[in-house]
Structure formats: structure tokens, C-alpha cells
Image (cartoon, rainbow, N blue to C red; front, side, top):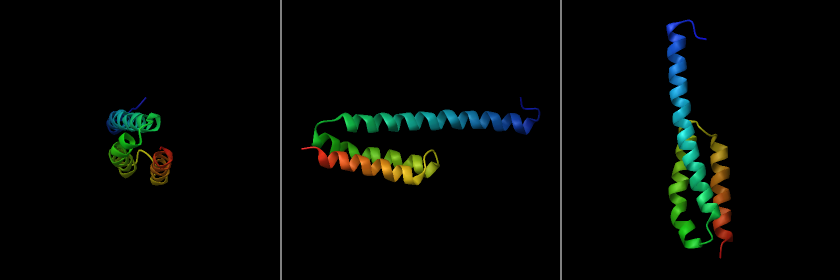
Length: 84
């Protein structure tokens, strides 16, 4: 348990950040899942830019690594291109 005021504040801040990051990461995962479960190419292409933006934001704020963001975006693009 934290004994100093600064440690207590750091715990509060890290918990707040953890919940914030968890919310945005889960929202992005759900959006990615929606595209990957889509069988309609047109709908997937329309939703892709929004998901790309969500992934880029996660990488920018440090929730995920930039290489993972690139890998996710690439995987989405490959999936969309395979749809007919």
C-alpha cells in the first residue's frame, strides 16, 4: 500500500489511465472484430478508415506499439482485399 501522498496520487492516476486505456482498446478490438466478421466488401471498406484512425490513436497515446498498429492495419487490409 502507498505510504506517501505522491504515491497515493500516482496510484489514483494510474488506475484512471488504466481504465481509460482499457475502454479505448476494447472499443477498437470490437471494431476490428466487426470488420473481420463482415462478409460484405463494400461495408468493410467503408468502415476501415474509422478503424484505422482508432488504431492510430491507440499507437499515438501509447496503448499499443506502433508496429502492432501497423500489423493490425495490414491484416485488415489483407482481409478486405480477399473479400469478393
